[in-house]
Figure 1 (cartoon, rainbow, N blue to C red):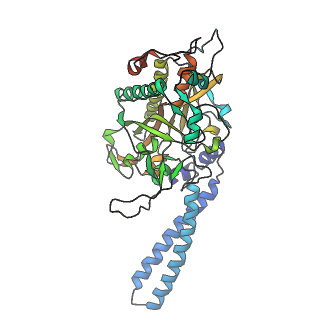
Figure 2: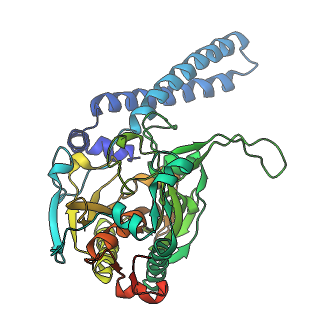
Length: 427
């Protein structure tokens, strides 16, 4: 969420941000509700105080004031509900260097590294390579797991495990505290991190799986909490300090989370239906940082996080490019965002393998994560996240970029010791 004081003082900038991010929001209407809300709160408090003052001295007048207070309280409740609903739509004003655009076609390439391979044979895609090497089975995956299900097998399973461990270890060496967080979480963690389109889960648009089975509390009573499967470790890591006040001297706090991830992909139905480019479950190592409320410092941290992702792609020998995300392709809470994409010969195009985002205090206000600075002032932390590496698409990129004429695949040098082999060959 955005600070209402900031909205009052920067009305035009917020309205422009909503327009550029394609959000239907009337800031004037929001501020009018805010004014009514504040006035009613003040008036109702005065009426309540007057009612208490009269007490038993003037019962009739006190009764009238009580009735008036109740009417005002009901009106305030209705206005506050409208106000809070509109506040959820208010976007973070994007950074000055964020390109203005309409959709992903307007993202700006700012870097490209590595040579796109040129084959002197007819290259295969990851589906065919997976079959002939017996390392990927999408047919039986669909039979058992349903649409977009898959099995990783033999050297394929080892390769992906090596990828995940290599990145997890690397992040730890870079100073990011390693965590294996919960993947089954309460509603507040997903709302707080911005993975719900509104206050509550909407199965029509939110690409999240809700768990239908009722849970129990430690005393055996039925739990009233709704539970969901995360699509990334980000919500679990961000919610770690929810409701707490941190020591500012310990910021920035850096974490990396390794987890299984689940995404319904309802907004992508019919897209990328072949192979495992877009799937419902996968593994991922995610970076998260809690930082001080300093835009310049948080941008430097974001650049560092994105730099690690670039380094990982270079270690693996994958051709990649970096895009700066434009306003029309940016979610409401993001201040500044970059995507990294690897070259996928089977699709003959770039494919997203990660995203680095700076949310400023948009998420921390929802999760109520604060810190005390050196002057004893309490502030909301800035929150940043970045994909260190997810499992399916780098796996695809390795198979397709490093395939040989006979159908074998050479393993990147940095993974060979972890894999225990240098090449995957036909059986």
